Length: 629
Image 1 (tube, rainbow, N blue to C red):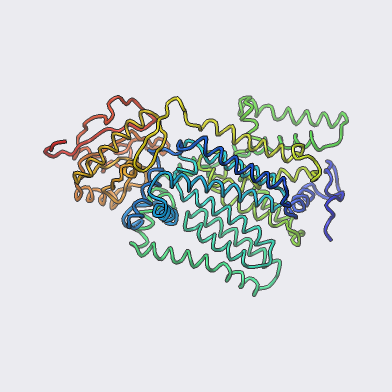
Image 2: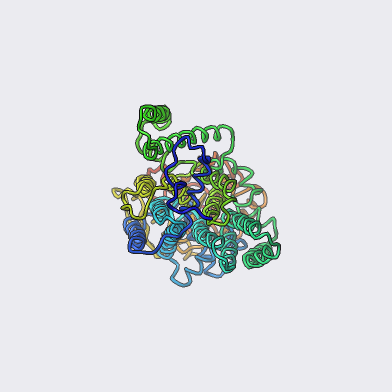
């Protein structure tokens, strides 16, 4: 028999209640509060409209300031343009991820034109789709407020003037992977709740699509689907039921098989895993050389020091939420209860002073947007399974599937969830799970209580406020911002960056008319896209780990000898974050020596440049009898 919603078991839990453990009571509240989907009414429609309005405002205020021309964004412009002209991924042009995203964008180029505007709208609409799906998932789990909060956070962190954004990102594979993950999550909740296998078929197909976009998204989806199937068969205790479930997800598995066969047909296993997929395949040159440092930077650091730091942060978060619980929910108001509240508060002060430096934003972020949010949600999901099997006839497992999926998806940012950086593509489900966990601390919430007086509303707004405040640091500086106008669209950049790119684009166009090539090193692939020129080599950028010694280096040199590469545009791109700052000196020395022996330095392409952290090009010319420039 289900416990009535307003029964004593849902009342505020007093410390010292021995009738049932606090954890059992908490998860009973969590399951019961997510047992009924929030209804569509004027408030929920207004919330959805507010989410769309926030998206429109963010698009308008940040238009064309996204991305970074010198970083991976250029690859995301260039590769689909090459595919739209009829060339083949991996074989004709190098790519580091699974194939779906560049082919999606190549299709968009064919439909709407090869331009930055096409990419802008693809990314903007992807951000809106993720936000709406999180809102609908939260609503399905009984809290449209938590869904709105997660969606709003996604919108604030999606439009940074940085290569970690949605409209012009470091990787559209991550952008579309985020969309597929949010849609998969929505379907996964229905897989548990609904009896029809149509939801399971759709979830399996989405998992296959996610794997074809980026490996970590697909692995997380299939792993969560496996957990759901396991729980379903344990609940039904029927092997034929499990076999029918497997048959339902088979289209997704078939899709993955077909794509993998096509990839291997292009050149074999070694060609795909060692000469492409840098940073994706765990045993390639990039991962073996730079993978540990790269993963630590993104949050997957499991060494002793990182775990100790996470434990300290976890104790602070536990203490902070304990204090919130004591202040808002503990009804005792005698001397002893006040002393307990004061004692907990005093215990929090050393961490606020020594680690957070008395900064209000740091403190709010540590409480309402904790760095280890993915870890907390994952642990809650695992713990909930331990206590939740007794409630398997309720909808409690739907919210546990959300938390387990959030942990699987966010494993890459396990100890580094921030409203920026790599985390923005992985943290949407974790934010929703965290807000739902917080909501369960307040079982007294009634639908009749005004929205702005609900504790969950205030806590959601606090989480959104952290992301909104963080986004202020990643607005473009309007005092030194000019439009770089090209035949393929406009992007707003710093004045000297525009001068360097204008000169570089002009040089590439003039060289192409003469039948000559210009090679951009080590990166700045956007030059090829914006000038409508082709890169003379299959490998078009040379960051650490991508240009490996041996076969790939020899391939690049051979292609340079075969093509009439008259000029190099050598930028000041630095890779200190990989521990190998300078191309040709700290890494890829063989290729650097080849360039220095076959080309000579001419000078800065924009003579008045004095940039250190923004793009600046130096022109190099081939050591051959010069012709008229």
